[in-house]
Image (cartoon, rainbow, N blue to C red; front, top):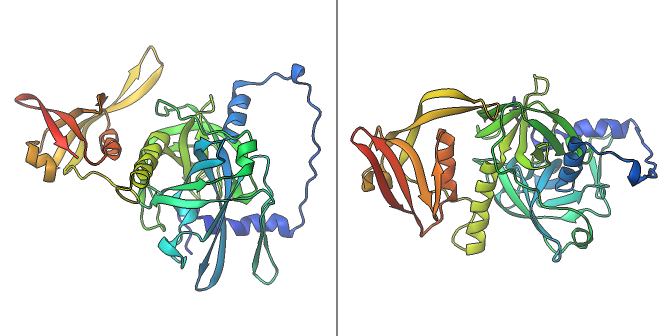
Length: 386
């Protein structure tokens, strides 16, 4: 399998992890005696420890015509029912998918998760080239629920786990605001399959599009981060200085130092909520995007510095470049400037093209919304049925 410029495919990381095992590197952990009255915890320490409780190590295996393939990745607990021992986990689609897998949908036939502090799975590369995986005693089986190759996101479920019931795992707290330039970012995941660990950096760029050169040419909107990440971090969390989820780590660049990326949390949760709605309502499986019929384009992009906040924000005009389908039916025209929408009583203003495009992921069949545009003749509002 070819290596991607951006993407660490899950099955490509394990040989790196094997080297230390084959060389006999061992460590002994001695449990410390802690006097809680003498500990001062920084905000970053508290955020990192909080974040670790909502991240899991993932291990996958599948059958190809050449034999078994094993891999490692990470996941973030999104929804949690401690009493039932149930958890929904967000990860990257490429962690569980391989076009060579012979199983249904080319999804890994076995997916297991381990929570922080209860890890024990090891993968060993034998001298004859074969691979042996030994699952930890507390590894938890996961079920694939649904996913989107387009957005490189997948949803897994743990059901009825006694370990989840008695553990202190928690669902990730989702940041209410998008990440901003220079913001602290804590990457928590399962690098190289070595179990959950954390690194720290900043948000280097709040939004860009990256293309996976050998994963179906998928292009995903991501934020750039400089927190060190490696293969196996895929699907793990990028958290802020309060331990809130701001992104799902998805890729890195082979030939660059500390240039990684994470799918913004709002985009990730919009995609996953869409998938969950389809399954729970029985209306559809997978991801269903509303086809409005507008191809938007950006004009007059500019960075605006907010003195009071000390932050800069990029704003742009969102122009309907081409119009067809439902948008044309209700009277929207090419050249209209899209400014806002009202859906379920909530008003959303758009300052970036991606904000408008990702809003469409939140629409559900059988509902309607109002779209506001500006044209030379004035402001127009259109009610559109989904």
